[in-house]
Image (cartoon, rainbow, N blue to C red; front, side, top):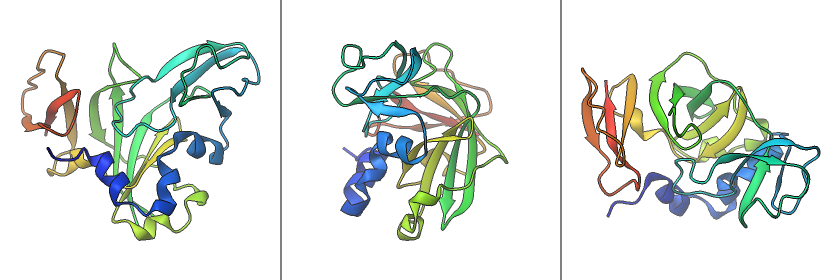
Length: 202
């Protein structure tokens, strides 16, 4: 079976850079209000909860949770909480600090924190965070994801879904009806993703 792309990135990366896969570290370095399970929230309210590290991606276990103070009862070990961000979800590829691929996602209506209904190229982008240092010089491409301009993830690989000369992507999920969008061609994900059957590209 072919390795899932994030798993390959983890295996291939310099061990000194493994902190990049830790979303809590990224959130803290970005200045977000956040903390691991066991650290109380600063005030009662809704917070975004997800795994600190999730190689399979797809937003697994990501959810909004109302927290009053204690974060032990409602969070699982290995999860963290963070302030909630609203706005566009951008996924940006950078090559040697320059944005080389910019796409915006349309969230899935029923699973907005786990899946996307569509990705399209855009002209919008955000600069890389200063704390990333010289890491972009050591990898062919890196990818950053932002919600409302707030950095939420960094990947030591590029976005694989736009490698076909396409400007748009519609995912096909294994447990949902095949969308079969007109004017698109299908690319199979066989053996590389747990939940996704493939993508339609145009």
